[in-house]
Image (cartoon, rainbow, N blue to C red; front, side, top):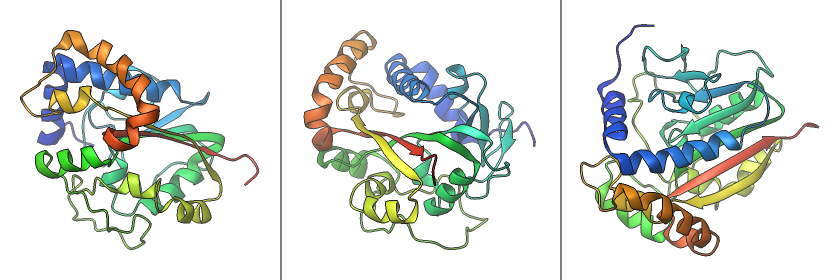
Length: 247
């Protein structure tokens, strides 16, 4: 592994650190992920930003791209770890970048202990976020794709290629297929998040419409509104899957 860092990872890290409002929004999301973990060792997929280890320092951080703070460079579709090695697999904005998600879930099932968890924060496609992501975000939203298709991973594929619709498809209209394919995984949490503060922050754009001081109270308002309105105006999903002990 080299010490070089992909310029896009480095730029995201810079934006995250220089926009206080965005940083507070992400800190809230990372804390929710950390709190959802089962007891035991944690594997992070797509940890190129280096941020999650600030909340869980004992995490094994990996990415398909190189960075000096990573513990390993791996492809999520072919994990080089022994069976039953981890109690958690965590990902932040990664699933929608994986070429064949079903290969990742097969690998995650193999390396997770019984009772272990997959915890991820991903784009959620609601009527409002669809419009935002379509007009203001560079990654496509392709709701007609099959999130469980199989194939041979392309070694030349750009790691940032994506379909932001994949998580919503997998844990929405295609979830019954997912359950048949991966009966060992039980969906124990699906929460809509980021109703207001995230879109107002502008994400990684240079602008922001929400003052830093308002982020915390707006996030508290979101928690109250999310159960009723998340599916209509939410921008992110927190997904927690648990590996059943008997399968």
